[in-house]
Length: 338
Length: 288
Image (cartoon, rainbow over all chains, first blue to last red; front, side):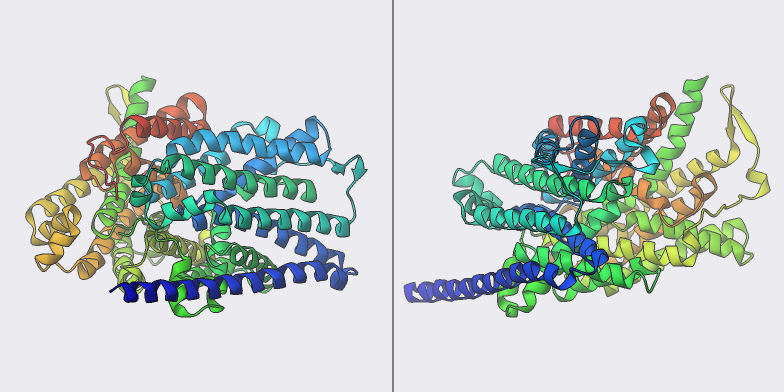
């Protein structure tokens, strides 16, 4: 009996370590590829912009994975946080200062405060109600843009965001932008991996695997969930802030539920809970979207079909391909099984 | 005067929401699935009514055929796709129905849903009726009456038929129902079918009011979600009351503070409600 348990736990350890090794290899590969891209694309400014957008998408994907992968809560309204960050950062840079190192953190703080207030109630609901309410909240944020259309520009979007500065140096070169976003992505990646390994991350995983048991051993489940939600919203808002400064304008469409679906798609495509998987999924998806949408209008049909097929056939996503089928299921959060 | 007119309009919106939320509640109760594709079903119902009218069918036939089309589509969808993930974690079912919603929206975009299509009701439903000194279009009265009749029919059917007994059993206690030889898998096909048919006819009947286009159901989906949360997830009578509450809040909010603020007001109310009564009006909401 005891040997049996020991063997099982050994087996689990082995599976876990192969998974972690693969994630490590994948991470190093992706980070290296990201550093090589500007050397290849130096003479194609348009592709540089596309690459930068892909990296921004990767940051959003990581922020969603901080919530879904760590704690098993599914957010259907993550575009709301991205959009809130984008609009608040854009408005601040118009009315306050163009200094990026001031306005982006301020945009994050706004998102964090809002997320704290909303999340306080949201995280106390069961997983399905949480999913519904996140979608509803992102729709409320979307509606608010039109309520304050004299400030936000309403339907036309937020126009004329000034070129940002970092330490009073203007950012105009696509290459400089790329490196800046690349650094932000690396910081997000390391933050996510660091949180995963920290005691906080362990507690999150405990809640993901068995909320009831986590509660019984004395974890403050609601507070830990709230922390995860707030960090996730803050990171998404950072990506939104960088996006609006990079783009110089934004439209209300970045808050639509379709955008939230895309962010979920990044995570599902890459493999929820692997951190590097969603980032990779975001890059693959953004680039693929750009090239496929120039061939066909019916993009949404393929997008929906792909979504369905991946969820049914390969719930582990891209990262799942690098694993055996047995370990694949470990990577998806179990949530409340019913 | 204005208040009476708003009350009546709230009744109309509430009745449309009633059909959508009852379907959502049933699917949730039996299958423990939150159907994110419900709004797409609504749009599909509205669009298929437009298609049927363009084939020369009369209005009533278009309503019934859109109901049949989406009903059969829903049953096939459950059989072909949703049944594949029955025993998977909750996350998968949410993602899957979301993918279905995107897919249906995409198909509707490609088949004429990019533009607003107008559905004209038959002439005998034009004109206005005077109730309590307020003029209300006859068609709106017709829609609410239709929705209320269908909702009562559904509730009676649940109460007296064998099928209804099975659904209620699976809703109350899935495991016990399974022990009594109720096959939840096949039961779900019919439940998704019936729910799809209900939401489709509400979409088709509402098309002369809201028009028909690919994303007409998106707003209904959000409102129906708010309704089921207010009423408590899985509670039928909660959903009935909440549908009218949401309908009233939206109509009054739109009248007094503009369309977009109404949604914010509704959301704040739902949040306040969740603090005090997290399990809905009747305390019947599921916590699993």
